[in-house]
Length: 353
Image (tube, rainbow, N blue to C red):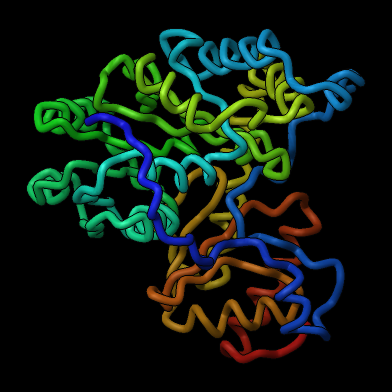
């Protein structure tokens, strides 16, 4: 499917997301400080911030530096080469650009999942549908299929071979498979990064979640070289700032840090599971960066936690579910444990802690 600019796309509107501590503080002004934000899937232990060369701040990014970042990303993710990598100011920007580069088409999105995918394709004028599985997506006749793998918020993982067969099917009909691997760093065995020579496959990777540096706003598209070239031209020059290029080039090359962090995240997720289950919440899925739970009074649980200065992610369309990110330290985990115990013992009211 050829890429072409769609100039009459609608304006993207706000979707509900994690974060938003300012709004939480306004809604619960009597909640104790400091707040504990468990509403995102961002690693609470960020990559150590190294010294950044002064020229990264004072000069426009050089082509060689960006090329080094592409090479570091290719090696880290397992892409065939730097020519397959496109750096962008966050995967959210890519999610918004892609629908404007594709002729209007049917788009099937495996869901429920990250809401921005459907919002961005729909508002760009595409006929967008949410489907429960890959079979339904391929059977819909859609020209574009979007899969978040591992999925947000339930952590569902589709096997590599299954996705490659889907890419082959879409390729035969001139379509695309877009695989959002924002949370793949925690267990990269299922990644399709090595397979992006396939012309029907686009893989998105997020830097900020695993490396705990969401404010850096950096993400990548992994694609066949012809598609990568078109995407680079669409993004334009100097889209990624010099400090982000310098820091990410170092972080992506630091395999020992990544290996240690995967072990730490897995252990912390187990501790969180124990805390949540003892608090009366039923585990429904997740990744080492977040856990999805259910409770018949999940909305009331979330509000009671907010009254105690703990913010979690809730879902307006699925009111029995909550998502918890990882507490940053033992004190935060203990505070969550005490709060859930108090809520369980008193019901699910809005009591203050």
